[in-house]
Length: 99
Length: 200
Image (spheres, rainbow over the protein chains, first blue to last red):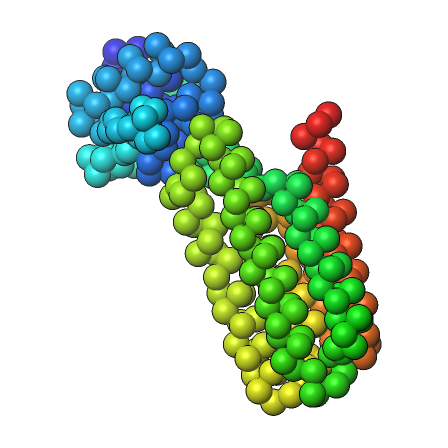
């Protein structure tokens, strides 16, 4: 498995949950935490952990602010994250096309 | 062997990515009740026109017709916006998202076409053109909305286009009746279907 082409894939994005988050964000740019959680059917904790990893990699930015005295968290894909996701999808495509 | 495994895994990943991206771009904040209210507003507009004898066949009726249907449009838009925002709030989604912006941008060109021809029709006193043009332009914008909101909306968009074409070719003198059937009837029907589906 070490030598296989899947190992060329970006490990941060390759994890199943994070790939889900990146796919949704690539389509929508920015989303509220609640909406993201509902779309992916994750738990609060699960989503937070993976968002932290993506944030540390510089792929997403997480912004917290108060609207009507309630906290609202917005997750946004960064330019770096977009490029990484596009590259990831390209590599997947290459693997599928290779004979 | 490894290659085959890789290819299978990559294909599955790509499929999942596509499914998620599609799901994320579905616009599901449309309210059935809002649709019903819009239909009833159109019915009210038609009734008012009958009461004040404002008819699309008489060139001198431009002012009352513009007033009545302009009010119907403003009221319908306002309640539509309110219902959509309330729906988004209830789901914990931002009221003005990137997706909302895309939906609005997709619908704008057909609204523009409708507005341009309406202006021309009013200025040149070709009032009998207005109901068919409104139905055609609205049908086009529903088709655009349907790209995000699914098959039901698209189906109603097609019905508006067909009714609009029929109104233009064959029923030009029945403007009010066509307004009643299309903007009244189709909206109420669509609204009932949406409300019904969310109940079950």
